[in-house]
Image (cartoon, helix red, strand yellow):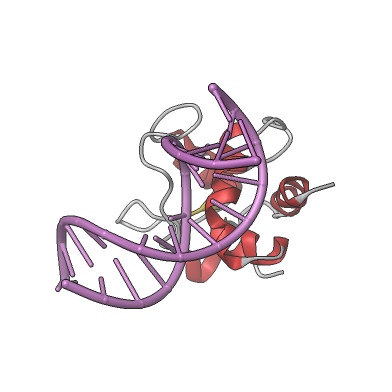
Length: 101
DNA sequence: AAATTGACGGATC
DNA sequence: GGATCCGCCAATT
C-alpha cells in the first residue's frame, strides 16, 4: 500500500453531501503538502467509478477548471444531487459540506 | 536514474 | 486585491 492507495481510501470514505479538499486528504494521508500528489493520483484515478473524486475540491471549494470528469457543470450536478450546497460563486459551500474526519 | 510534469496550497510581489 | 512564484509529493517518460 502506498500514499496513493491511502488517498483513494480516504476519498472513498467521504459521505454523500460532503466534500473534502486536496490539502485535507493529503494531511490525512500523511503530508498536507502532498496536495499535488493527491490531485495527480485522483487525476489518474485508476479506481474511477469507485472513488468519488468529484467530492474532492480545492481549498476554496472550487474544482479544477477544465479537468472535470464528465465536463464542466457535471460536478456541480453530482454534488448537488448528493446534497452539497453551492454558492453563487459556483463553489462548494465549505462551511456546510466540508468533511470533518 | 534523472528530469519533467501535474485535479494544489500557501506565500510573496 | 489580484497575479505570480515557489515548494511539496508522487508518477510518467
